[in-house]
Image 1: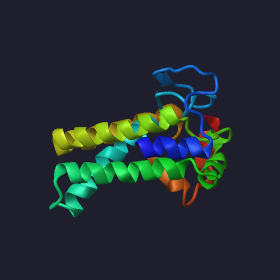
Image 2: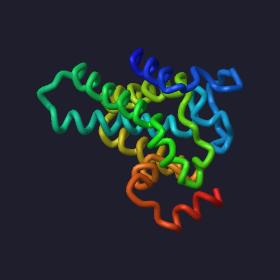
Image 3: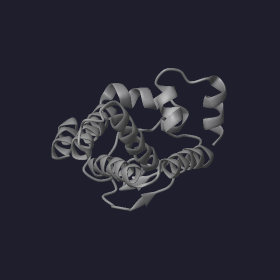
Image 4: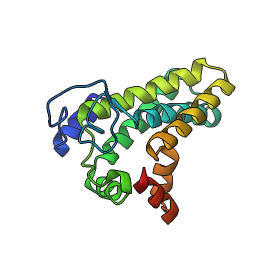
Length: 172
């Protein structure tokens, strides 16, 4: 995570919000504070990353220890956080209705996203499978309902965004 922060700093990402405030929650997805504060609506997708990484690594790499899987999951998440803040990905996000003013994550937000993945990973490790699935589906549906966006639409948006989804997001 230290490397993550250093790379983002070299990319020119701000350490904290340009307003120089630090808030625990930034709930307005269209504000300049989105993706700049400790947590926001997209924090939930990083918890889901942890659920999915735990499941995938448990299933495909059962011989690895828990700590090795966590390290691998953390490396993947750090890699995503760095990739997410490249001009190519930032520009791609800007093509979507909810992210037209997006200019990348602050370093504090990016590091918090990685911590959220670790929390999700730990929850998936400790909770029963059905509880993890129920929480994961609930978080995704709640986010889709609340802000017309979520992990599923972000993944889909990298491949294809149907017009009806783009219109629905623009109305949100």
